[in-house]
Length: 218
Image (tube, rainbow, N blue to C red; front, side, top):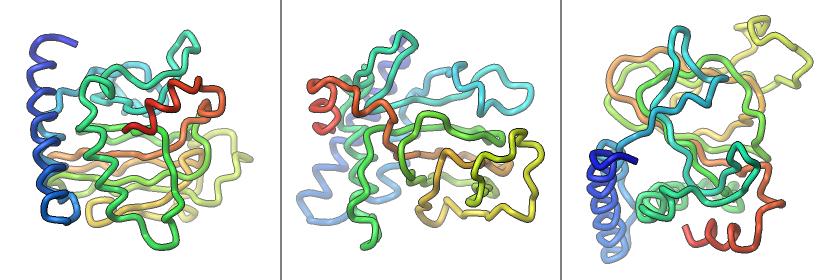
């Protein structure tokens, strides 16, 4: 984390703290505008490890993991940025808590994937357990989520997916619940687009008690 990144993230943290305090004082939901303000100030890392989502011709994307993760050495822990800027994570979490549909009140998650200004290519997630919620924020046109809900992994090559089997989900105007282990991609878009994916990491059961406690604190 560079000094410039830290400066931007501290502003995002300040905005998130103020938003959470204001919502608690007035007994209201966290607003989409408050989440967007914090995301706009957040300094995203260049992420070259997400090879399965990289758009053609790109070597990296702006993307951060928050909450629980497993690193390349196999260690399972809460990410450093989540410890350093907890109110940013809490703001994103509270946004979903405030809006969970009645039939999804039992939905739990351990991790968030936060993305900025790229359209993920067709891929399947590999390490998720159970369904995920996703929401997009920003001033953009396009950017719908293409999703193949009947994908049972019997089709090996993603390019062989049939277009007529997909559904298109409008993430700008609402939350979507989907199975990230099934094929999905993002339509091209114009403008500024952030997305947040809420999911349970498949490694959660193997995490230490300390890591699980750190996750719950967020």
